[in-house]
Length: 455
Ligand code: TYD
Ligand code: MG
Image (cartoon, rainbow, N blue to C red; front, top):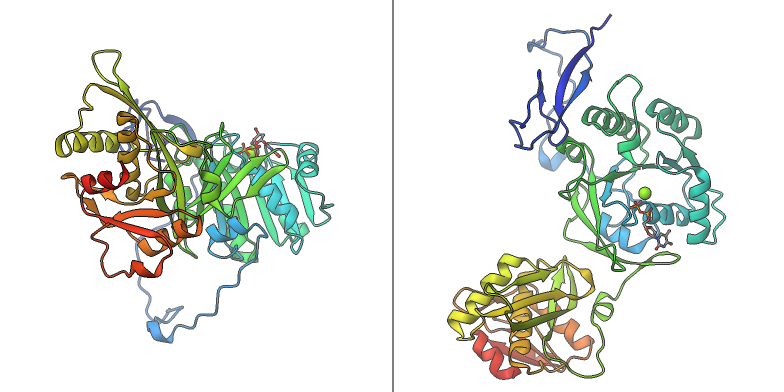
């Protein structure tokens, strides 16, 4: 009989130790070690034995490898298809992560209801079939004849269901609730997650069924469970957004079958998630009158242009140390931009509280938003409006120069499409003929030049 042995496993990174330790030697986290039962199989001599003539596969040259186009299943949710790179690949394992209550189950159930071309097996360890049915009724008016529901947490039972029903698509909500009977640790522990995912992967590849796993994230925002989970699966998607705002962003962190630069945008409504295909129009609040402290940035997310409203408030500091606070924009970058304004453009902001907000609860990482941030701060500081029909794009460097940005043509044509009268762009984006656009393009090489145009 195989001997059972226990080891202590770090719940953060999956490192093992024979005895309990307070601080993980591998990832540095405190108090993450939990005792788990290790599976000890037959110990085999693992030494490499070379037996000549037992070659199973012949190495081949790159040019002689034949590729057929990867077939994909259209999920019927356009934004999801976009993030997956055109649909889900049969036999692939997709992991969808996100904070509790962000709408993972809603998104997946909505897809399952729409995907009538496949027999779907929806396995939930979190909700009963009755609860799912109630939600499904709210989300769509389809009868769902093609979608089978089962409330199950035992992996062995799930494999039996897959064998019996032979579905064309499997959903597991969530991987942290699944357990393998052979392993004694609690569901959600590193060994359970690792073993369950590996078993599901095997079935997916053998039967060529796509499987979508829902995963929880921990307080740091990483997928709960060890990194190995992300290595095993083919695609890792992250669903994010502020729960108090209605926008949700679907991002791909890893994709073996497509690009990771695409994002999908949804809006949470009372009858489920609605796809947002014209993000720019949604993300700009429409003001009756012009106000100070607001600037519109022409940014890019992936390969899609976005117009985003930046709001700033600069007011005299009530206490000795001025406060700087930012939502949706990196605080360190805000501090840097304030220092540039102070040193290079001579604005006295050291005694001011500065608050910055990106509209819609979005997080923006495109550096081209810098120029709009700077303009919004100055507009609030001087109480002068940035004209409502002007948008800005450009990265601001440490010496106050406006640095070139990527995909300038797309940003300009999006601004033109949305009816802006002018756009401020970096002068160093050379070689582009802005004459062709029906919008005034103002080229600036320093922030002062941009301000002269704006104020
Ligand atoms: P849910 O999909 O259960 O989140 P997750 O699986 O990521 O934990 O639902 C998230 C929230 O969305 C829930 O608090 C209620 C809200 N919601 C709506 O606003 N409209 C809807 O149609 C549905 C189904 C949920
Ligand atoms: Mg859920």
